[in-house]
Amino acid sequence: MLAMTDAAAEAISALTAQQESAGLRFAVQAEQEAGAQLALSVAPAPEEGDQVLGTENGAKVFLEPQAADFLDDKVLDVQQDDEGQLNFAVMQQGEGEPTPQ
Image (tube, rainbow, N blue to C red; front, side):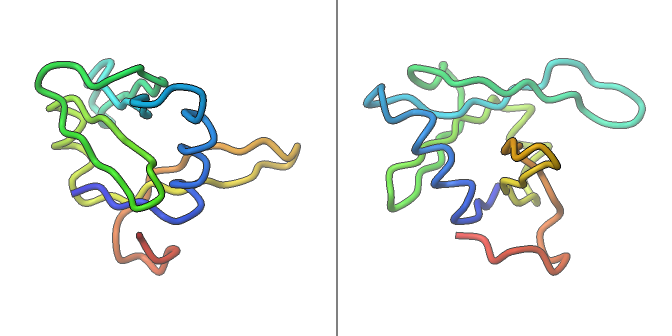
């Protein structure tokens, strides 16, 4: 199952704070030789068939079935780029990355 760092959960909560049941939705946009191309969006609610993940602080993630399979052994984190922008990053679990929530 996809794990989430505290930083990712806080970022998702901030993104979806305006809508009570909203969450961050992952969907597979296209499968390529190098792997799956993921689409990320803020969704007002999960779509039928989505796997729903939640945290204690209220962050919600919706995973369409193919995305759930692809992200099963991953950790969702947030990283800051050189310009100070926050970006979501998906990493393998257990690679010495931040502790998942």
